[in-house]
Image (cartoon, rainbow, N blue to C red; front, side, top):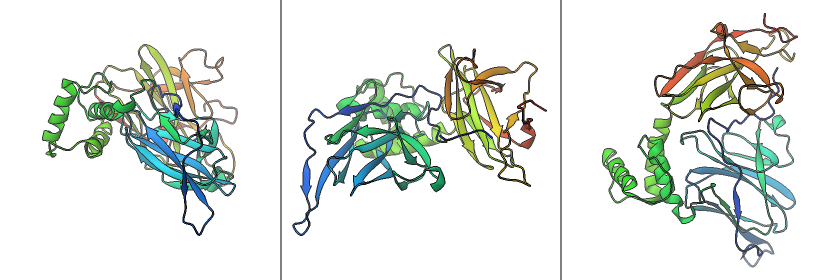
Length: 364
């Protein structure tokens, strides 16, 4: 059975930016907030600010009386900050952030190298907990300097005070408008599309800021769900999906997305028109007489005489190119082609789509 220590797959079909955490200009001690006089406890303020064009959700870890507790999720819109307090000023803090799946191109991560617990839903866990034993996944958190009172999340194009306008441009594009450039500058096209959006959805022409972002977010989430590649599991066991796409002339394969029976997931969140794309999947192989036995996963059957091969790995992966898989530490697998004559496609896999492999890894 495939080993999947990392089961949260956010590197979805677009180059995800690395972790960008901009330190505050002042590296002095975080401002203290005195608690009522009948206690000796002092609280310190930490601001997590979003200067990207994406709506983010953040999880963070704080030390309280020697123990680090990790909590998520807090949604932060572009141009806004989330303020939290902590009581141990000399201990590290930890931060992980990701874009919401409403944005085209997949989820982007802002991260570090400290592996701590998380899960899809809201959560709270102790840093010392074993994530797997507590049915939790993991993320790679950034270690924040104890002296840092403000942590700013940015993109390579640091929008700064233009983040809110950049977000409106991105959300308009996510909602289907022809926004060609996200630069944070309120040009005529951006303003025209905003007026059109308000009129189309019968919104007050004076709404702006967080209220306008919320309206665009709702429409964008519905739009993104209709494009790209949606993989559905109609089989009797858990499956893991992977996808390969050619972007600007270069092939890239990514996985894994975990799908329990009856569930669907989007593997790709951009229009398929004019794209080259293939997909692959593995199915959990459980022996009903010995559920604890480790058996090789069932592999997706080929549908062509000469299937296209792409690189995969045992756990979460993102492989550039499709040649020399072994030399790069990957394994070559036979992917199925995806029809790309429309914006989106839904692929449903059942038990008959998979073939059992022998213990030696050979197809039967």
